[in-house]
Length: 298
Image (cartoon, rainbow, N blue to C red; front, side, top):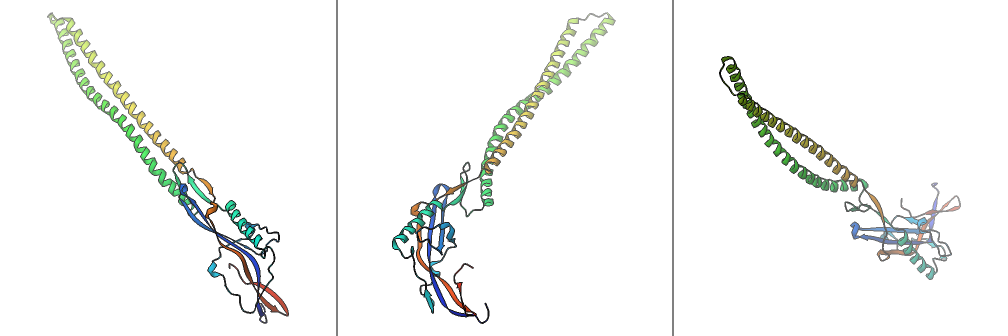
C-alpha cells in the first residue's frame, strides 16, 4: 500500500462456519482415526442450500477465534439464511448428512495376509509390512516342503548306500569267481596236453558261477544308477517346489486393495456451527475506501 494509506477501522461480514470431528472406527481394519472437516461459507444461498465441498478449508482452532470485536469496527447486516433459526438448524443437519455421505478414509488391505493400514501408513510402509508377513509364512511353508523331500531323499540315499555296499561285495565275488575260472581252465588245458583226466563239467560250473556274479554286479550297478536318477529328480522337484512357493507368496504380498471406509453418523460430532464474523480491514487510499480480508491461512 502507498505510505499515505490510512486505516479507518474494521468491518465484520457474517459467514457460516461449520466444523465437525469425524471418527472412523473399524475393528476389522484396526482403524481408529479422527479427522476434522471444516467449511467456511462466505456466501450462503438465501434458499438455505450449501454445496459444502465448495467451501472446505483447513481446521480452525476454536481458541483462535476472537470473542470480542476490534475497536472502531462495524458489522454488516445479517441476512437469511444466517438470520433464520429454522434454516440454520436445517443447514446443521445437512452438514452432518453431507459428512456421513462423503467423508471417508482409505484403508489399504491385504485380505490373504489379514494386514490392514489406515491413511497414516504410507504405501511403501504397507508394502513392507506385507512383505515381512509373507516372508515369515513363506519360510515356514518352505521348511515343510524341504522336510518332506528330505525324508524321501534320506530313504533313497540309504538304499543307494546299501546297494553300493552290495556292489563292492559283488565285485569282490566276481573277481574271485574269475580267478577260480581261470585256474580251472588252466588245469583243463594242462590235463589235455599231459593226458591227465579232468572233468569238463567243473569248468562249466565255474563259468556259470562267474556269469552269475557278473549279473549281480550289473544288477547292483543298474540299481545304483536308478537311485542316483531318483535323487536327481527329487532335488529338481524340490527346487521347483521352492520356487513355486516363493512365487506364490510374492504374488500374495503384492495383492493390495484400497477399501473406502465411511463414518457412522453417531461418530460425527459437530465442533463449531453458526455465524462467524469475518473481518475486513477498511483502508483509505487517495480518498477511496478499500476492504482487505483480515483472516486467512497464510
